[in-house]
Length: 461
Image 1 (spheres, rainbow, N blue to C red):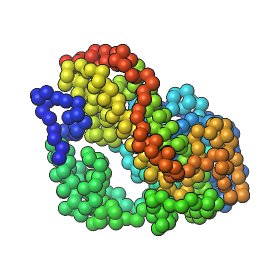
Image 2 (image 1 turned 135 degrees about the horizontal axis):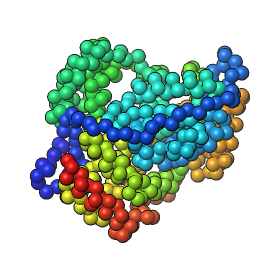
Image 3 (image 1 turned 120 degrees about the vertical axis):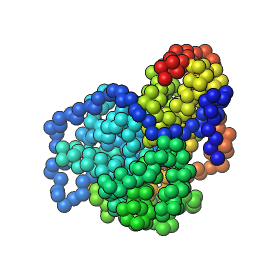
Image 4 (image 1 turned 30 degrees about the vertical axis):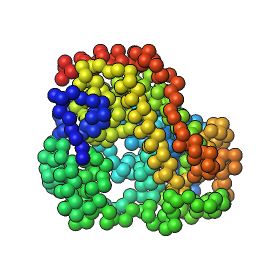
């Protein structure tokens, strides 16, 4: 059971991790980075392609911190490509550090699509990504360039590649009716009551939705009212491509040629000729990279905490919408709310506890990504620890390959599963070792920033 502590009683940081939205907010809009204009392109690398052949699209995915953004950027330079972000956080203006958003210089050098397209108070869905991503793909191809989709949001990529289910769109009348029915629950913060409403309407799976995912809950009710059936009644195109024997269970080693044949079988019935690569490192190395990345995001006073403070200034609460549910932002918002209740005061120990929660959440997310993509047979797994030029040249050659028999060299292959007892025991014994934020003096600047800004926040609000 979720327990909300009164702000009039002495708060603890652990209580702040359970803060939920308390109602519909009136949002104060602030200005964020403006969109980067698309460059004009004169090179046409696809104009001579025969109309009968499917256009090629490169997809680069991988767990958080694996280096997929850098690989996509260098590949775009080499292939005259444009990048489509498949990241559910990079769509938001102002959420730059926590989403590891490409820099403005990178976005000027290579056009990036679906970056900075929404205000943080807006929700974004997999269905909208499918429409936006496919439109960007057509635009890039018409420009004579190569679409390169890069990101780690698994459901976004699954729908983008295989298609979206033909779920009915709600009429304006039904959408208004659903908003009215859900509004009172959302205003009171009564998530359980709203879930029961949708369950009784005909969707028992609503009880398994992520806590406070109001968008999906409303969408479920819209579908029921529009069709008389829950969302699960509509076939997802991906299911028709999936081998019934596919599962997350480990099994005997599978021959690389067999894997490539499965990829070819899947690819031939898709709209585009997708060349999909999953970039990853050994799990221990990946965890170390993630922990260091989290440290870097908190360095200085213009990092993740500053961006999380902006979300609070908008009237958002942790876990109340898509932006505030994002890993890093949710933990940072919870921590800052706790600091505000303490009058802008935080001990070094409380800061390090927040950092540890952030790192743990990021590692858990990477683990879920690995599990998700392990069952996506269309991806070639690549070892991210190999030299960038080596990986880059392989994917470049794979794009131009006409044999239809793409095989990852053994030196670049990354195994999908843990393969040794030592690796498994190493993971069980893993402990974070911070490099920069270790002692109280290392976070003194951050604690001073909290004292200056979060105390003022209380006076203003």
